Amino acid sequence: MTLEELGYYNKLEEYSKEQKLGDFEIGRVIAEHKERYIVKTIKAELEAEITGNLRFSAISREDFPAVGDWVALTTYDSDSAIIHKILPRFSTIKRQAVGQFGEIQIIATNIDYAFLIQAADRDFNINRLERYLTICYSSKVSPIILLNKTDLVDEQKINEILESIKIRIKDVPIIAISNETQIGYETIKKLIEKGKTYCMLGSSGVGKSTLLNNLSGRNIMKTDLISQSTSKGRHVTSHRELIVLENGGILVDNPGMREVGIADTTTGLETTFDKIISLSQKCKFKDCTHTNETDCSVLEAVDKGEIEKCSYENYLRLEREKEHFESTIEERRKKDKEFGKMIKNYKKDTSKNKY
Image 1 (cartoon, rainbow, N blue to C red):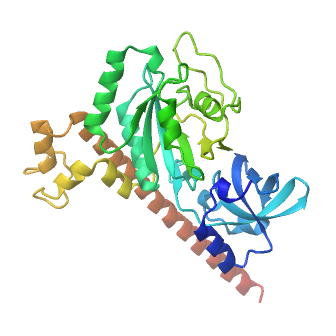
Image 2 (image 1 turned 90 degrees about the vertical axis):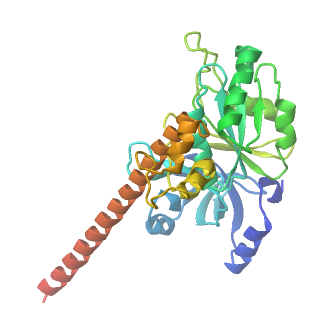
Image 3 (image 1 turned 30 degrees about the vertical axis):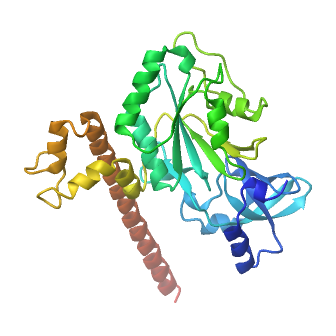
């Protein structure tokens, strides 16, 4: 296998030469297990950890390796390695870390396309789809919507769901599929390009692992039987992993996400809700919140039915979430700055007391 088959591209080669990384091996992180990584090189799959210097210089979780990253490393025996440097990322899918205000969790890096997977039976939620879209757009990743488990509902229900998506979401491919009958699989396979990396995003039980197994032709990810009480597959994926498919495409499986908090999404929101953003330019007040102001173009469009009320309400919800996240980050930075100043003053006082 060559690095190009893992998704390596010219700009990374140019960067490696500029940084004089010729003495290091280059590999891609294909799995992560609590800050221990599996890195695939042209020679082997290696278990790797980061250098103390890389750990010490890290300011946030974004400075640690993640699945999809290209890294420079050295090996110290047949199957172990040390990661010295993370090569530049062209995209980073991330969300708010669950239960940690102001913290970011990286889902995957260097992703070209994201499959946004929802089940047609009980999981379907168009608000959640808009949330995933916002994350994709802010991450510079192209989304593709997969409506799975179509074998569990009738054709009328499928058409209703597809129509509801098309009304609210424009210019995004939508494919109706079934893991059981494999309807829609040929369309997916035609979209998957050699050397491009795809990430699967969706809640637990929507069929991501089964889809991966079927596309790869191998039983890579363990799956469980469908629960009789919920009609959902019980989710068993516990970590992120990157798989090279037989046709040369690269696919990242992820654990199901109950909470998908958006982070750093100014561009994402503008793209997902482009019609609302466009109309907001016509509002009477520049700082219009689109909630109760007079001469608000957005509210007028909602009243006329030009914008769905549910989409408008979802936009307001995500906008508030974004503002809260940004204020939380600002608060953390302020506290870190105050703490740094306190440490600096403490060192000064300690130094004076010595003499």
